[in-house]
Image (cartoon, rainbow, N blue to C red; front, side, top):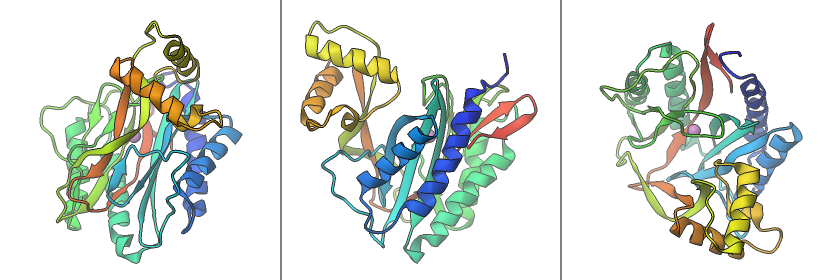
Length: 297
Ligand SMILES: [Co+2]
């Protein structure tokens, strides 16, 4: 067996192509929902599946927001927009994010976030400690007068698992694990302004969920939904919009809420920069293969 399963190559190629569609397709006046549906359509047409719900993070909304079907929000000229999406092929996940803005005030922060990602990538090698990669990310952001989000990290990936064992922080951390040959992982600098708090807090809502385990509850409607999600997603995240069947999301949300209370499912609250400052993000997935580092996305 190859060190890196070949499905990662296809997931990565689809991700690269869809990212180009996102960069040219996101425009002022487009709704968050339209952006998600565009990404979902482009992934499906290339033979992939979404690894998790498309995240639309506008300004201080930093991660884990997937618009529901009743969300009428549209992109504004003043916004700093992050589109975070993933593609899986047979459960093998490629994860990527890109920022888009029409506001020249955010040109520099966008450039710095992308530079921080590239600075991190250039130092990755076998046995590199994840906390040292975080140090590179932070150093590059600080060089331009910005800070990084201290409680969001990149992560290793595994089959049907988006956040596997190792985290790749966005600042220096001592005593961390090392990346090893065979690891597939995403690096994702989140960069914000120097005056910001520099960390995220849970927002009031959750729009993204996943199965913890395939457990029976004894309630027919709940068990049927668990079986459906397991068949479709295994433990990969989902959003209720995908299961509304045209009948509105409220019923699905009710079932999901009960399953979260029973700890059969978990909720991922929307994450917001604590002081309300905008955040820029870029992300690539890569692998430490026999020949060294291979960028998949
Ligand atoms: Co990620």
